[in-house]
Image 1 (cartoon, rainbow, N blue to C red):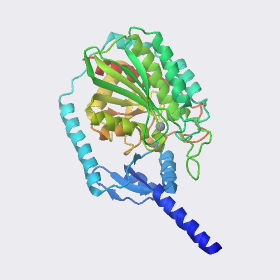
Image 2 (image 1 turned 180 degrees about the vertical axis):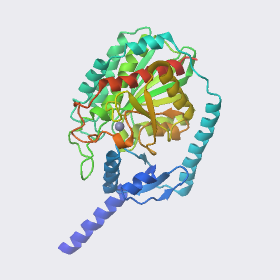
Image 3 (image 1 turned 135 degrees about the vertical axis):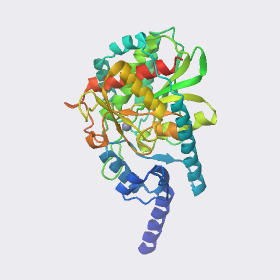
Image 4 (image 1 turned 60 degrees about the vertical axis):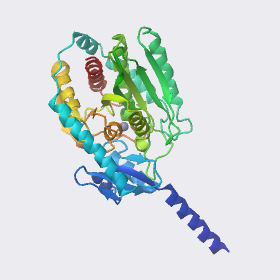
Length: 396
Ligand SMILES: [Zn+2]
Protein backbone atom coordinates (compact mmCIF):
# COMPACT_ATOMS: atom_id res chain seq x y z
CA UNK A 1 0.00 0.00 0.00
CA UNK A 2 2.68 2.36 1.05
CA UNK A 3 4.82 1.34 -1.89
CA UNK A 4 1.98 2.07 -4.33
CA UNK A 5 1.39 5.37 -2.61
CA UNK A 6 5.11 6.20 -2.86
CA UNK A 7 5.13 5.31 -6.54
CA UNK A 8 2.07 7.43 -7.14
CA UNK A 9 3.60 10.29 -5.19
CA UNK A 10 6.85 10.02 -7.14
CA UNK A 11 4.92 9.81 -10.39
CA UNK A 12 2.97 12.93 -9.62
CA UNK A 13 6.15 14.72 -8.51
CA UNK A 14 7.83 13.85 -11.81
CA UNK A 15 4.75 14.90 -13.76
CA UNK A 16 4.76 18.13 -11.80
CA UNK A 17 8.45 18.67 -12.49
CA UNK A 18 7.84 18.10 -16.23
CA UNK A 19 5.02 20.61 -16.14
CA UNK A 20 7.31 23.06 -14.43
CA UNK A 21 9.89 22.90 -17.22
CA UNK A 22 10.40 26.14 -19.10
CA UNK A 23 11.81 27.10 -22.47
CA UNK A 24 14.48 29.77 -22.32
CA UNK A 25 16.50 31.73 -24.86
CA UNK A 26 20.11 32.23 -23.81
CA UNK A 27 23.66 31.80 -25.07
CA UNK A 28 25.72 28.63 -25.39
CA UNK A 29 28.48 29.86 -23.05
CA UNK A 30 26.12 30.21 -20.11
CA UNK A 31 24.55 26.79 -20.78
CA UNK A 32 28.00 25.19 -20.89
CA UNK A 33 29.03 26.92 -17.65
CA UNK A 34 25.86 25.67 -15.92
CA UNK A 35 26.13 22.20 -17.57
CA UNK A 36 22.64 22.53 -18.99
CA UNK A 37 22.14 20.88 -22.41
CA UNK A 38 21.02 23.04 -25.33
CA UNK A 39 17.89 21.97 -27.17
CA UNK A 40 18.93 23.99 -30.20
CA UNK A 41 21.73 26.44 -30.85
CA UNK A 42 23.21 28.71 -33.49
CA UNK A 43 26.99 28.97 -33.82
CA UNK A 44 26.87 32.29 -35.70
CA UNK A 45 25.11 34.29 -32.96
CA UNK A 46 25.89 32.01 -29.99
CA UNK A 47 22.16 31.97 -29.21
CA UNK A 48 20.64 28.81 -27.77
CA UNK A 49 17.34 27.44 -26.50
CA UNK A 50 17.06 25.07 -23.53
CA UNK A 51 14.16 23.33 -21.82
CA UNK A 52 14.98 23.68 -18.15
CA UNK A 53 13.80 22.43 -14.79
CA UNK A 54 13.52 24.64 -11.72
CA UNK A 55 16.84 23.24 -10.47
CA UNK A 56 18.55 24.01 -13.78
CA UNK A 57 17.04 27.47 -13.68
CA UNK A 58 18.68 28.14 -10.32
CA UNK A 59 21.99 26.79 -11.69
CA UNK A 60 21.75 29.23 -14.58
CA UNK A 61 20.94 32.15 -12.28
CA UNK A 62 23.88 31.17 -10.06
CA UNK A 63 26.34 30.80 -12.96
CA UNK A 64 25.16 34.06 -14.47
CA UNK A 65 25.71 35.72 -11.11
CA UNK A 66 29.22 34.26 -10.88
CA UNK A 67 29.87 35.86 -14.25
CA UNK A 68 28.74 39.17 -12.80
CA UNK A 69 25.54 39.57 -14.74
CA UNK A 70 21.80 39.45 -14.29
CA UNK A 71 19.45 36.71 -15.45
CA UNK A 72 21.42 35.77 -18.55
CA UNK A 73 18.35 34.28 -20.20
CA UNK A 74 14.94 35.20 -21.52
CA UNK A 75 11.98 33.10 -20.48
CA UNK A 76 9.92 32.00 -23.49
CA UNK A 77 6.35 31.77 -22.14
CA UNK A 78 5.24 28.92 -24.45
CA UNK A 79 4.09 25.30 -24.00
CA UNK A 80 6.03 24.11 -27.00
CA UNK A 81 9.00 25.48 -28.91
CA UNK A 82 10.09 24.20 -32.32
CA UNK A 83 13.13 24.60 -34.56
CA UNK A 84 10.91 26.80 -36.75
CA UNK A 85 10.28 29.15 -33.80
CA UNK A 86 14.03 29.36 -33.21
CA UNK A 87 14.65 30.13 -36.89
CA UNK A 88 12.14 33.00 -36.63
CA UNK A 89 14.06 34.48 -33.67
CA UNK A 90 17.36 34.16 -35.55
CA UNK A 91 15.78 35.85 -38.58
CA UNK A 92 14.58 38.73 -36.39
CA UNK A 93 18.07 39.21 -34.95
CA UNK A 94 19.61 39.02 -38.44
CA UNK A 95 17.09 41.62 -39.68
CA UNK A 96 18.09 43.95 -36.83
CA UNK A 97 21.76 43.50 -37.83
CA UNK A 98 20.98 44.56 -41.42
CA UNK A 99 19.15 47.65 -40.12
CA UNK A 100 22.11 48.34 -37.80
CA UNK A 101 24.56 48.30 -40.73
CA UNK A 102 22.40 50.71 -42.71
CA UNK A 103 21.97 53.03 -39.73
CA UNK A 104 25.69 53.00 -39.04
CA UNK A 105 26.43 54.11 -42.60
CA UNK A 106 24.12 57.10 -42.27
CA UNK A 107 25.22 57.93 -38.72
CA UNK A 108 25.52 61.67 -38.23
CA UNK A 109 27.91 63.12 -35.69
CA UNK A 110 26.25 65.21 -33.00
CA UNK A 111 27.05 68.77 -32.07
CA UNK A 112 27.47 69.94 -28.54
CA UNK A 113 24.42 71.44 -26.82
CA UNK A 114 24.95 73.96 -24.07
CA UNK A 115 21.67 72.85 -22.45
CA UNK A 116 23.10 69.33 -22.11
CA UNK A 117 26.38 70.66 -20.66
CA UNK A 118 24.37 72.63 -18.09
CA UNK A 119 22.18 69.63 -17.19
CA UNK A 120 25.19 67.30 -16.90
CA UNK A 121 26.98 69.74 -14.60
CA UNK A 122 24.04 69.57 -12.23
CA UNK A 123 23.89 65.76 -11.96
CA UNK A 124 24.23 64.98 -8.26
CA UNK A 125 25.89 61.86 -6.82
CA UNK A 126 24.17 62.60 -3.50
CA UNK A 127 20.72 62.40 -5.14
CA UNK A 128 21.62 59.01 -6.64
CA UNK A 129 22.81 57.86 -3.21
CA UNK A 130 19.42 58.81 -1.70
CA UNK A 131 17.58 56.80 -4.34
CA UNK A 132 19.81 53.72 -3.94
CA UNK A 133 19.47 53.93 -0.16
CA UNK A 134 15.70 54.08 -0.43
CA UNK A 135 15.31 51.32 -3.03
CA UNK A 136 17.70 48.95 -1.24
CA UNK A 137 15.84 49.50 2.05
CA UNK A 138 12.99 47.26 0.83
CA UNK A 139 13.78 43.75 2.18
CA UNK A 140 13.43 42.42 -1.37
CA UNK A 141 12.10 43.56 -4.73
CA UNK A 142 11.78 39.94 -5.92
CA UNK A 143 9.07 39.44 -8.53
CA UNK A 144 7.49 36.59 -6.57
CA UNK A 145 7.73 38.22 -3.13
CA UNK A 146 4.60 38.35 -0.95
CA UNK A 147 4.12 41.99 -1.98
CA UNK A 148 5.87 42.16 -5.37
CA UNK A 149 4.54 45.63 -6.23
CA UNK A 150 5.07 47.49 -2.96
CA UNK A 151 8.23 49.24 -4.14
CA UNK A 152 6.85 49.68 -7.68
CA UNK A 153 3.78 51.55 -6.41
CA UNK A 154 5.93 53.53 -3.95
CA UNK A 155 8.23 54.65 -6.77
CA UNK A 156 5.25 55.59 -8.95
CA UNK A 157 3.97 57.82 -6.13
CA UNK A 158 7.40 59.47 -5.79
CA UNK A 159 7.64 60.15 -9.54
CA UNK A 160 4.06 61.53 -9.59
CA UNK A 161 5.13 63.85 -6.78
CA UNK A 162 8.15 64.91 -8.84
CA UNK A 163 5.97 65.61 -11.90
CA UNK A 164 3.86 68.11 -9.97
CA UNK A 165 6.91 70.40 -9.96
CA UNK A 166 6.97 70.42 -13.78
CA UNK A 167 3.38 71.26 -14.79
CA UNK A 168 4.53 72.35 -18.26
CA UNK A 169 5.73 68.78 -19.06
CA UNK A 170 3.14 66.49 -20.69
CA UNK A 171 4.06 63.39 -18.68
CA UNK A 172 2.18 60.45 -17.25
CA UNK A 173 3.13 57.38 -15.23
CA UNK A 174 1.42 54.00 -15.54
CA UNK A 175 1.76 50.48 -14.18
CA UNK A 176 1.89 47.70 -16.78
CA UNK A 177 0.51 44.32 -15.70
CA UNK A 178 2.13 41.16 -17.10
CA UNK A 179 1.17 37.57 -18.00
CA UNK A 180 4.40 35.99 -16.81
CA UNK A 181 4.77 37.66 -13.40
CA UNK A 182 2.54 39.23 -10.74
CA UNK A 183 5.00 42.14 -10.67
CA UNK A 184 4.27 45.26 -12.69
CA UNK A 185 6.50 47.40 -14.88
CA UNK A 186 6.47 51.14 -14.19
CA UNK A 187 6.43 53.40 -17.25
CA UNK A 188 6.73 57.16 -17.56
CA UNK A 189 5.58 58.58 -20.90
CA UNK A 190 6.50 62.13 -21.96
CA UNK A 191 4.58 63.08 -25.08
CA UNK A 192 6.70 64.49 -27.94
CA UNK A 193 5.61 67.89 -29.26
CA UNK A 194 6.56 67.26 -32.90
CA UNK A 195 6.91 63.52 -33.50
CA UNK A 196 4.82 61.93 -30.71
CA UNK A 197 4.77 58.53 -32.47
CA UNK A 198 8.55 58.22 -32.34
CA UNK A 199 9.81 57.03 -28.96
CA UNK A 200 13.14 57.19 -27.16
CA UNK A 201 13.40 54.55 -24.41
CA UNK A 202 15.57 54.59 -21.28
CA UNK A 203 15.20 51.75 -18.78
CA UNK A 204 16.47 49.83 -15.77
CA UNK A 205 15.07 46.85 -13.89
CA UNK A 206 13.50 47.49 -10.53
CA UNK A 207 13.37 43.90 -9.25
CA UNK A 208 16.08 42.19 -7.20
CA UNK A 209 16.83 38.55 -6.39
CA UNK A 210 18.52 36.39 -3.76
CA UNK A 211 19.74 33.55 -5.98
CA UNK A 212 20.16 31.14 -3.03
CA UNK A 213 21.95 27.78 -3.28
CA UNK A 214 18.84 25.77 -4.13
CA UNK A 215 17.21 28.48 -6.16
CA UNK A 216 15.74 31.95 -5.69
CA UNK A 217 13.97 32.60 -2.42
CA UNK A 218 12.13 35.43 -0.78
CA UNK A 219 15.22 36.04 1.37
CA UNK A 220 16.75 39.49 1.82
CA UNK A 221 17.79 40.93 -1.56
CA UNK A 222 18.73 44.62 -1.23
CA UNK A 223 20.08 44.72 -4.80
CA UNK A 224 21.87 48.04 -4.24
CA UNK A 225 24.08 47.61 -7.30
CA UNK A 226 21.75 45.22 -9.14
CA UNK A 227 19.78 47.22 -10.05
CA UNK A 228 18.80 49.94 -7.58
CA UNK A 229 21.85 51.75 -8.99
CA UNK A 230 20.68 51.74 -12.63
CA UNK A 231 17.16 52.66 -11.51
CA UNK A 232 18.62 55.53 -9.45
CA UNK A 233 20.94 56.78 -12.22
CA UNK A 234 17.83 56.94 -14.41
CA UNK A 235 15.80 58.81 -11.76
CA UNK A 236 18.51 61.45 -11.41
CA UNK A 237 18.64 61.82 -15.22
CA UNK A 238 14.86 62.20 -15.27
CA UNK A 239 15.01 65.18 -12.88
CA UNK A 240 17.27 67.11 -15.29
CA UNK A 241 15.34 66.03 -18.38
CA UNK A 242 12.02 67.20 -16.88
CA UNK A 243 13.64 70.60 -16.32
CA UNK A 244 14.17 70.83 -20.12
CA UNK A 245 10.38 71.02 -20.47
CA UNK A 246 9.63 69.32 -23.78
CA UNK A 247 11.01 67.05 -26.48
CA UNK A 248 10.24 66.69 -30.17
CA UNK A 249 9.98 62.91 -29.90
CA UNK A 250 8.18 61.06 -27.12
CA UNK A 251 10.39 59.83 -24.29
CA UNK A 252 9.62 56.76 -22.20
CA UNK A 253 11.32 55.68 -19.01
CA UNK A 254 10.84 52.09 -17.83
CA UNK A 255 11.50 50.41 -14.50
CA UNK A 256 10.98 46.77 -15.53
CA UNK A 257 9.47 43.86 -13.60
CA UNK A 258 11.08 40.43 -13.17
CA UNK A 259 14.29 40.95 -15.14
CA UNK A 260 16.18 38.54 -12.90
CA UNK A 261 13.75 35.70 -13.67
CA UNK A 262 14.28 35.95 -17.44
CA UNK A 263 13.58 39.51 -18.69
CA UNK A 264 9.88 38.94 -17.90
CA UNK A 265 8.63 42.54 -17.97
CA UNK A 266 10.73 43.89 -20.83
CA UNK A 267 10.06 40.84 -23.04
CA UNK A 268 6.30 41.47 -22.82
CA UNK A 269 6.65 45.23 -23.30
CA UNK A 270 8.98 44.97 -26.32
CA UNK A 271 6.83 42.26 -27.97
CA UNK A 272 3.69 44.34 -27.49
CA UNK A 273 5.39 47.44 -28.95
CA UNK A 274 6.41 45.38 -31.96
CA UNK A 275 2.87 44.00 -32.39
CA UNK A 276 1.50 47.54 -32.30
CA UNK A 277 4.20 48.64 -34.80
CA UNK A 278 5.38 51.29 -32.36
CA UNK A 279 8.41 53.21 -33.58
CA UNK A 280 11.18 53.10 -31.00
CA UNK A 281 14.22 55.00 -32.27
CA UNK A 282 16.66 53.96 -29.55
CA UNK A 283 16.84 52.03 -26.29
CA UNK A 284 19.24 52.72 -23.42
CA UNK A 285 19.51 50.13 -20.66
CA UNK A 286 21.19 50.83 -17.31
CA UNK A 287 21.86 47.71 -15.25
CA UNK A 288 24.53 48.04 -12.50
CA UNK A 289 26.22 51.45 -12.36
CA UNK A 290 27.65 51.59 -8.82
CA UNK A 291 30.81 49.47 -8.84
CA UNK A 292 33.86 50.87 -10.69
CA UNK A 293 35.44 47.42 -11.21
CA UNK A 294 37.91 48.65 -13.86
CA UNK A 295 38.81 51.81 -11.95
CA UNK A 296 37.35 55.28 -11.54
CA UNK A 297 36.20 56.93 -14.74
CA UNK A 298 36.21 53.68 -16.72
CA UNK A 299 32.99 52.17 -18.01
CA UNK A 300 32.05 49.38 -20.38
CA UNK A 301 30.03 49.25 -23.60
CA UNK A 302 28.57 45.83 -24.42
CA UNK A 303 29.05 45.06 -28.13
CA UNK A 304 26.82 41.99 -28.54
CA UNK A 305 23.04 42.25 -29.05
CA UNK A 306 23.48 46.02 -29.21
CA UNK A 307 23.45 48.39 -32.19
CA UNK A 308 26.64 49.96 -33.60
CA UNK A 309 24.96 53.29 -34.35
CA UNK A 310 23.81 53.52 -30.72
CA UNK A 311 27.32 52.64 -29.56
CA UNK A 312 28.62 55.37 -31.90
CA UNK A 313 26.23 57.78 -30.22
CA UNK A 314 27.65 56.74 -26.84
CA UNK A 315 31.19 57.41 -28.14
CA UNK A 316 30.07 60.82 -29.43
CA UNK A 317 28.44 61.65 -26.08
CA UNK A 318 31.68 60.69 -24.37
CA UNK A 319 33.82 62.79 -26.73
CA UNK A 320 31.50 65.77 -26.35
CA UNK A 321 30.63 65.73 -22.66
CA UNK A 322 32.51 63.16 -20.55
CA UNK A 323 36.02 62.27 -21.76
CA UNK A 324 36.22 58.98 -19.91
CA UNK A 325 37.56 55.57 -20.95
CA UNK A 326 35.01 53.22 -22.54
CA UNK A 327 36.08 49.56 -22.67
CA UNK A 328 34.31 47.15 -25.04
CA UNK A 329 33.05 43.83 -23.69
CA UNK A 330 30.40 41.20 -24.45
CA UNK A 331 27.74 39.85 -22.11
CA UNK A 332 25.85 37.17 -24.11
CA UNK A 333 22.16 36.97 -24.92
CA UNK A 334 19.76 37.89 -22.14
CA UNK A 335 22.19 39.67 -19.81
CA UNK A 336 19.66 42.49 -19.40
CA UNK A 337 16.45 44.04 -20.75
CA UNK A 338 18.04 45.64 -23.83
CA UNK A 339 18.09 42.11 -25.33
CA UNK A 340 14.26 42.01 -25.32
CA UNK A 341 14.15 45.22 -27.37
CA UNK A 342 16.97 44.18 -29.69
CA UNK A 343 15.38 40.86 -30.61
CA UNK A 344 12.08 42.64 -31.30
CA UNK A 345 13.86 44.77 -33.86
CA UNK A 346 14.78 47.90 -31.91
CA UNK A 347 18.26 49.50 -31.70
CA UNK A 348 19.73 49.28 -28.20
CA UNK A 349 22.79 49.91 -26.03
CA UNK A 350 23.91 48.94 -22.54
CA UNK A 351 26.74 50.92 -21.01
CA UNK A 352 27.76 49.14 -17.82
CA UNK A 353 29.85 49.61 -14.67
CA UNK A 354 32.62 47.09 -15.41
CA UNK A 355 33.86 44.16 -17.52
CA UNK A 356 32.92 40.54 -16.75
CA UNK A 357 36.23 39.79 -15.08
CA UNK A 358 36.10 42.85 -12.81
CA UNK A 359 32.55 42.33 -11.63
CA UNK A 360 30.79 42.94 -8.34
CA UNK A 361 30.75 39.52 -6.63
CA UNK A 362 28.01 40.47 -4.19
CA UNK A 363 25.10 40.72 -6.63
CA UNK A 364 22.13 38.35 -6.13
CA UNK A 365 22.97 37.98 -2.41
CA UNK A 366 22.07 39.75 0.83
CA UNK A 367 25.52 41.41 0.57
CA UNK A 368 24.57 43.58 -2.43
CA UNK A 369 24.45 46.70 -0.27
CA UNK A 370 26.04 50.15 -0.29
CA UNK A 371 29.62 49.59 0.90
CA UNK A 372 33.11 51.10 0.70
CA UNK A 373 33.42 50.08 -2.97
CA UNK A 374 30.20 51.81 -4.00
CA UNK A 375 30.87 54.94 -6.03
CA UNK A 376 28.01 57.33 -6.57
CA UNK A 377 30.31 59.42 -8.78
CA UNK A 378 30.57 56.32 -10.99
CA UNK A 379 26.77 55.96 -11.00
CA UNK A 380 26.54 59.67 -11.91
CA UNK A 381 28.40 59.00 -15.19
CA UNK A 382 25.41 56.91 -16.27
CA UNK A 383 22.91 59.65 -15.36
CA UNK A 384 24.95 62.01 -17.56
CA UNK A 385 24.90 59.48 -20.40
CA UNK A 386 21.10 59.13 -20.03
CA UNK A 387 20.62 62.93 -20.07
CA UNK A 388 22.71 63.30 -23.24
CA UNK A 389 21.24 60.18 -24.91
CA UNK A 390 17.65 61.37 -24.45
CA UNK A 391 18.40 65.06 -25.22
CA UNK A 392 20.07 64.19 -28.52
CA UNK A 393 17.79 61.36 -29.69
CA UNK A 394 14.52 63.06 -28.71
CA UNK A 395 15.34 66.32 -30.47
CA UNK A 396 16.26 66.15 -34.15
ZN1 LIG B 1 20.53 43.54 -13.07
